[in-house]
Image (cartoon, rainbow, N blue to C red; front, side):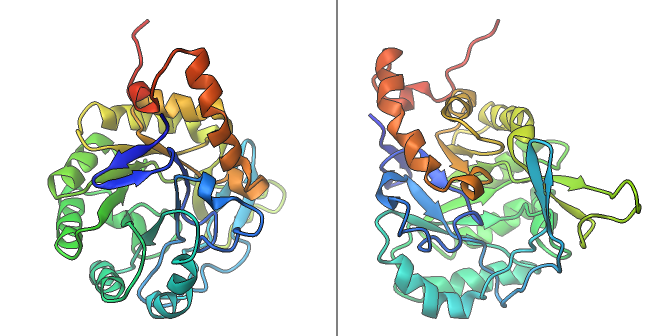
Amino acid sequence: MFKIKIKDIEFNNPIIASSGTFGYGYEVADFVDLEKLGCVITKSITLESRNGNPSPRIHESKSGMINSIGLANVGVDKFCVNEIPKLNNINTKFIISIAGKKYEDYISVIKKIEAIESNHVGYEINVSCPNTSKGGMEFGVDADMTHKLTSDMRSETDKLLIVKLSPNVTNIGEIALAAESAGADAISAVNTFVGLSIDYITGKFILNNKFGGVSGPAIKPMALAKVYQIFKVVKIPIIGMGGISSFKDVIEFIRAGATMVQVGTLNYRDPTILSTFNSQFPGFLKSNNIDDIKDLVGRHYEN
């Protein structure tokens, strides 16, 4: 009724904790029942350790937030030694997010992870982060570059390969098609929108990095539109995200074409909300005479 299968991986339900909002994934195990989640995605792992951008790097905005964290993480070597053994013991599936400031970084990171023993079921390739000075989004705004990177990553692993797309492009369907044709198993859509905030008194930029990624309820209608546009052109599953703040939002994304959903910003307010969403599926399906959540994917109608 709730189980979802992508490639050869079966998830308990469609709810995923989005990268960067659950730490590496195991830190919340003391107060969140991870078994009730479909999956956890780690924060993005880079070749070298990163402290992230200087503060201030988070700013609350109306109906959301702007962040310029800058992919702070311990780097792949320490991640493999210190973090993966802890992740191997959590009570749910986990996916490793990979990012880089250079093209070659992505390949080096996945090679290092593939060389060790780990229970992760796949990778999410972050080609869409708008708040780093190098790398991130620049690899995901060009279809040819997306195709090449996805193809090279595909050659390094047989595990689930998900490409996380940026909404800050002219034609997101074209980018999604490039990832699909290069061997991606699924598309994550969308990452944050580029945003800016200025102190109206002093005229200073609020964030040290000037620009940041806008997330939260304000972006949901735009994120839904991107998921729908992708759904119309690709055959592989879509993992929808962007502004989800209620169970109703979860269903909207599934109806727009998402097979699974990621919840991000809301976790900062209430990390238990994901298991709450999961508990609402039985009642919703029963009251709407739906046998299986998969039957709802892309089930939308014209006026």
